[in-house]
Length: 400
Image (tube, rainbow, N blue to C red):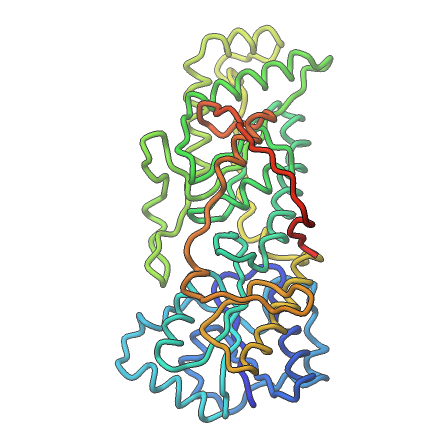
């Protein structure tokens, strides 16, 4: 049996672990595993390749699981949108050329939709879930690494914010799910977190910014304080209107390239600072006011962008990636395909139909209410947390 492996979509932590885990399992089972470079673009052009890299034991050792990104390469290509009526035939001919019987594909929801498409066209695929957005129905490799990097950046930015008494707005990836902004923000003890699931009321946000910033600066013996916000790129305002820079265009899957949420948030706060007489008096009381030069607190936007994708993968993502890659090979070996690996629990490889796995998963708003009770602002009128109490008889679901 020969298999191919593809990594697709956006890069993130843990992808090399998927590749290495798949290679190690293939070698253990006596299966050849070949790298198909550059995602679905490489798959479409497979017939043009003269040779592929065989991930035998020696070559697999060169993959470093802890490094983020993918040595197999990526592209954002939707097979269904390729203007070629013979595209599936061409892909099958490429697979036949290299005697490849099935594919391990690591990607997110867009990549998963292509897996469904390929499966329906007679190409055997197993999905090792990957997206730092955490918007699949399963855990996806890259999520933990990204959340940790966001938390580190936001926490570190508090030093520069406090030095200048600034409001620091950090815009992060996530598309229409706010998981990484939510978890990264909580991990950094951010004051406010704006996510796509909750239309943002900037008047309520401003009151929280104003109250906390003034209190911190006034209570400091050297008048130093900051306020930190984490903003997800798919932000909506109180009317439900999406905040997006239309000039950014669309990607190859037809999605808007989301941008501008952080900048918009800064503008809304700056506008309210300038119109607020209490802020002018506060600046004068704290001896910061300089007419025409320094009349309101500064609001600065930071976009770590691809820095949250790179560097080193977290230990959790390395664990999950190795197991997901190995499990995908096992599933194909047992003629199970068109599915997404959920996890490996003891002697069970758990999986679900890919069509079901890529249904969008959003932030649990009951959990948001819990964190509102703890003091985090989500730019809405606070909803009282009403938890239900449940005594469990067996151990809870564990990551490890």
